[in-house]
Length: 390
Image 1 (cartoon, rainbow, N blue to C red):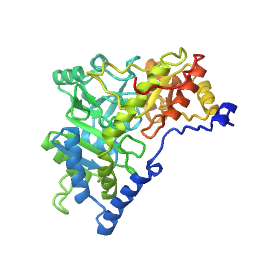
Image 2 (tube, helix red, strand yellow; image 1 turned 60 degrees about the vertical axis):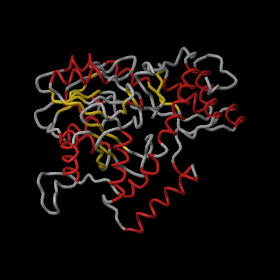
Image 3 (spheres, helix red, strand yellow; image 1 turned 45 degrees about the vertical axis):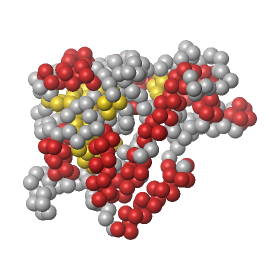
Image 4 (cartoon, rainbow, N blue to C red; image 1 turned 135 degrees about the vertical axis):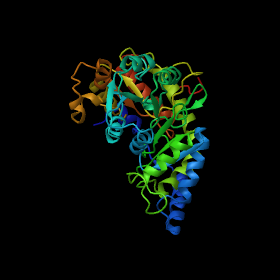
C-alpha cells in the first residue's frame, strides 16, 4: 500500500527501465533483429565481427571477442591464460557469484578476500596480503560501476608474476586514469545482461585484450576448440555470441557514452542530496581525475536497511539488494571453510547495502522522489528540488 504522500503525488519510481520504454530505440532494435532474421545468420557471422571491431575500438584495445555471457568471458579468459587445476585466483567476496564461478569452471580455486570498507572494492594492499605460492591470477572487480585503483595492483601483479583479469561486467565505458576499464590488465571481461549499462536482449558477453595470442585462444575456446571446421585442437565450449545479440549491442553501443553521462549526472545529484542524511552512508568514489563511476547501480549503506526499503516502498520508490550473501557464505562455496566473521567488511555490507533507483531515462521528478524519500527516512530536511547543474 502506497503512503498518502505517494498517492497524492502519483509518482512511482521503478528500480530500472528496459528498452521497451523507449519507442524510438525499440523500433531501431527491432529493425536490427529483423535484418538478422531475414539473412538467417544467427551464430557468429558479420554482426558479431562488426561488434567485435567496434567494441575493441571503444575499449581502446586491439581485440574484442564476443562470447555467450560475462561468466563465459571470465572463464575463457582464465583458460586462455592457462589458469586451471592447482592454481588459486584472488577474488573479492563482495561480488556477484559469477566471478568465483568462472574460476571454479576453469578448474582453479577462488581465493576469496575482503574489500576496503570505504570503496567496497579490493586494492593492492589486500591483494598483497593474500598472495600464496599457488596464486596465478587476481580478478579486480569494478563493482556497481565504480573503478578499482588498478595501477598498484597491476604493478604488484607484475612483480609477483601473476595475471590480471579485469571483471568489468558492471562498468561499461568507465575510465581509470583516462584509460577504459578492461584495457588495464592482460584481459578484460564484460557482461551484456539486459540490465547492464550496455545490455543485450538476453545473455551475452565479451573479452577485450591487446594480446593477439589471448584473443585467438578465446576465439578457439568459445567454439569447441575448432579450427578449421571439424578440426578440434583443444577441449572448448559452446560459448559463442549470437548474431541477434550482437546486432542489438551494436546499436546500443553508439548510445553508451550518452547514457553514462546521464547516469553520472544523476549519481552526482543524488549523492549531493543524500550526503546530509546521517542514517545513510555513501561509498567513496575517489578523485575524478583518477577514478570513474558509471553508476550501474547506486548503492548506499544503512544499518536499518530493511526499514529503509519499507519506507521507500511506502513512498512509491523501488529498491533492491546487491548482494544479500557474500560469496564465501554461500552454500556453493562452503567447502572453502570461511565461516561467518572471516571476511567482516563484506559481511557487514551484505547486511546493510541497499540499491536505489538510477537509470538513464530517470526524470528529474523521479530523482526528487528518491532523494526526498531517502532523506525523510534519515530524518534530514528534504529540499524542494534537485539541481542537476550543480
